[in-house]
Image 1: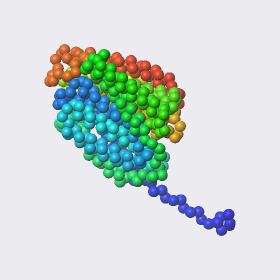
Image 2: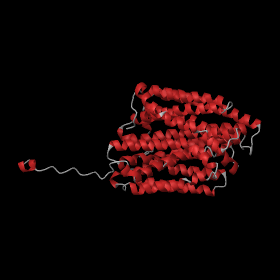
Image 3: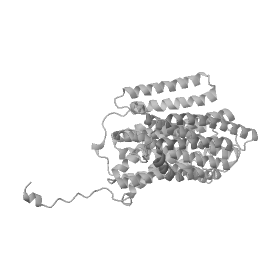
Image 4: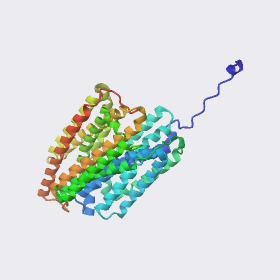
Length: 489
């Protein structure tokens, strides 16, 4: 280097074109927060409205089961396909497409006349939500180039999404008191539209250099949805047609065939939807099982509780919605304690505490359904605290056990495990309730015999959920480590 070169002033660093504060990125943050909010709220918003839906469409317990479960089924089954499409086609473009289609699916509820049509609308909405969920978080990393801003933005989106999941049923109860239940899904359209504009004008266009090469495993996604859907539908068919009927056996065989085809496809595909070798990692497998078990319990309780309040106890939708406030308190209140518990006890012992909370809350619920709301509120609060503990710890453990290059697929696996639990929990409870009160719900006020049958069926289903939670928790907890990590990488 010459003397003149050494004395020459250094070129000033190039100013970053990325936002340097959350306020500077408000259009994009608004869009991403709303995108996460609508997909999470849609998971739970119809629970409070189920009695109104049942009366309006003359839907039975198995119809209500599928009205709730269809969304989780397609959402969970196609999450990893949505993430792959975003990597191939562009994350911003895929999210915009998902938001547009999701909003249109919400408007389609205005055409619904039968339970089957509503189930179809919910299934389609779940499929479009799968185009949104895997991409929302990844776009945060493109929005900012400073780690502190990324962490703040991720924290903001997580608070919004968890609040939406918890507050959704309460707001739905207030809305159904004054509006038709269809309004709950129609509102997805304006929210998706606002989110679309925020993403469209707040985020830069996709860089073709960032797109991943290779194929998209659409057959794998179809096989996964087919396997889960047919196996769960065999529960419904068993209740309606008999457990030994040719229809039930045929549906179950079809589901098992799809499951075998899925495993074969993922082992032989050049670009599989799910790299099955990742499940050979004990902590990955165990964390997924643990979170599935927690969501089985949570989904079952949320599915039954609003029907208990409105059908058996005769409450209004608004009262049933407000009755879910302990879910909100537990979800938001447990957050600070979870990090402290992980720092002191590590993942394994913290998850043991969370699992004990969830299982204990189910035992409380078994007593509560026959002894008034105060016990239900206590059960809700304890369950949600346990769920928040497991969800936070399990997600960090799962993603942390994977190589840095697999964090996106780890996040998708985490969400898929939760949605699988959601579908199974609703299916188990819906099947037991159909066996207890019949395939068609009585219209109007229930007589004491029907209420007694409903309570009896609820207790049986909660015993089943508790047994499942115990088994899955034992499998999952033993694979975790004593890590004190509290943030996903």
